[in-house]
Length: 157
Image 1 (tube, rainbow, N blue to C red):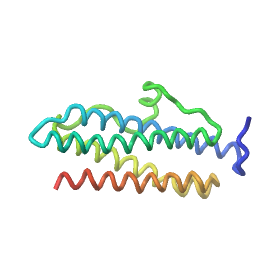
Image 2: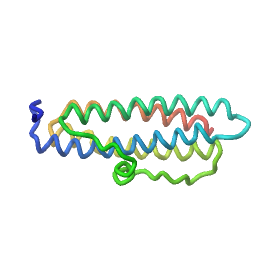
Image 3: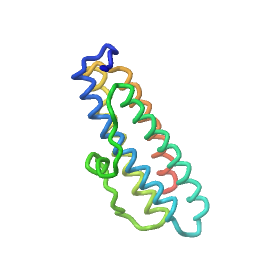
């Protein structure tokens, strides 16, 4: 059954294409944050272990809300690692050292990359694709990622 919410089906499909990439980015970021949580070492291990746990819990909620937004628009979500790796803007490769600062630098770059991608699509989705709901939704994601990036950046000072 087609979704009848006052947006052309063609526009919904274009919005979903954007959201699917967001979902892939979020899932890869979640996985990388889990890796940091599991593998961080050093004198600040316990604090960073808990910090990364808070971060991946927040990203897990984002993953779910993005997937649900896609479903609310009448589309199915990709749900395999292979699909996510093909769709993401991020890399799963660790570029930094396997320590707290290395993980933080890596995750910060990923959050900033997601923020830029989301910001690039806010007006496109609202104005050209006529989907104010999804535009508002990804604006909220920008705010969430900005706060998470700030928290990461604060650890590097």
